[in-house]
Length: 477
Ligand code: ATP
Ligand code: MG
Ligand code: MG
Ligand code: MG
Image 1 (cartoon, protein in one colour):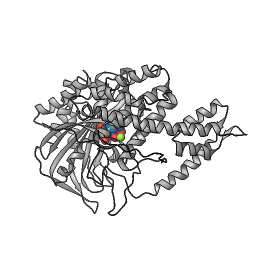
Image 2 (tube, protein in one colour; image 1 turned 90 degrees about the vertical axis):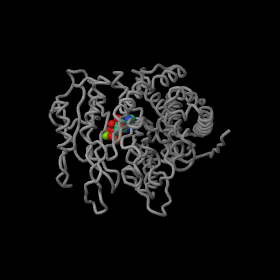
Image 3 (spheres, helix red, strand yellow; image 1 turned 90 degrees about the horizontal axis):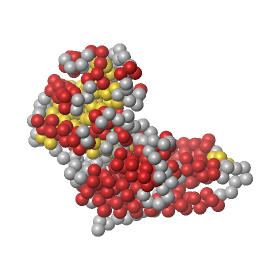
Image 4 (cartoon, helix red, strand yellow; image 1 turned 180 degrees about the vertical axis):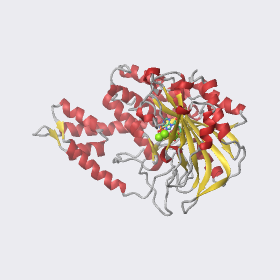
């Protein structure tokens, strides 16, 4: 099955179960001071769960473009290094607003995975909330008993509050959740599961694919829980992970989601994918980041120096740094990936195809600007003279901070001259800057950023900061 077919089967399946299929919300959230980017399928239904908007359809399904680069969900550092966390990804989801509950949600997720997608049953295992005495929360026996009808008990793992209890924020709807994991190791290597938690990051071939949240409580301001008058279901399944499982690949990047991009990058760089870890990571970073960049721009947020625009600029520069440093792209290149993506998402998220030329132009301008900054830094580097064959920490930091040099690049260039970099001093400078940037106003701990009235909100999702050198302005033509 291709990605297109897999996505469509999900939607068709839930349509056949009485769900209304709705479009994805934009990836950039407008008019909500508590959330910058859509990070889960349920974001657009927040008001329904809070009882602040009327429920038009009690059953809904969709595929939602999500971005996880800030706040509670910040996967950026994993991206490209591991094989299943992306910045932008599609979250397939089905919802019940006061309609069906655990029995149907579990039955349907099992039916879809094992009958429609034919994932071998002995590769699947599930997790259920074990309860939390301190919090006065009971084990989710109901979910456990339903799962027992489908899967051997030894494959039902009990999970703690951190992994198996979902809360919207400090207050509001919450409840236990049940995750579905896939173990793609060869049978002989599969660990026996003795009721012990085997989390997905224990092994890159064991990954979480689907989360079913059962909202049954409301957390009040005083911390206590009350039963919700209406119980809801909120599920989310990462499409790229699902595709990897169905297409039986060892990495999300080996699927037809990413291969067209990766193969193009490999061809243009003259370096084969799979040749070396460093260049592989760079290719994965580029293939991943361009998707985030494209959809943010297509959804109306351009790279800029503040808030969401700043996040996008940072992602774009991260991709350029990797391609410049490890793949030797010294000229703008990233923008060439835009048409490939626009074709891939044609008919799925048509927003991209409709604005393809505009998006490509913006990416090109940003690349040009950043590459010029890098070039200025390189000139500074060439003029730098050192008697002890060592790049001092403050200069390495200046290159990093003002000219956008990743420290890898400074090390590489130093090595070419037979020099080293004073990494300890560099780290110290970096730490001092982190401390400065931590003095920010937003407390960002839940799915929504808590902002105090009157706060001047600034993006603080990154642990590093960089000085911007140019402000670009855009106009739609
Ligand atoms: P993980 O533990 O792997 O980080 P998660 O528990 O943070 O995942 P959820 O918040 O439960 O993820 O989101 C629901 C589903 O979305 C996950 O089961 C997974 O399939 C997918 N997903 C989550 N984060 C990412 C990501 N960064 N890239 C791709 N898919 C993701
Ligand atoms: Mg996560
Ligand atoms: Mg998880
Ligand atoms: Mg999860």
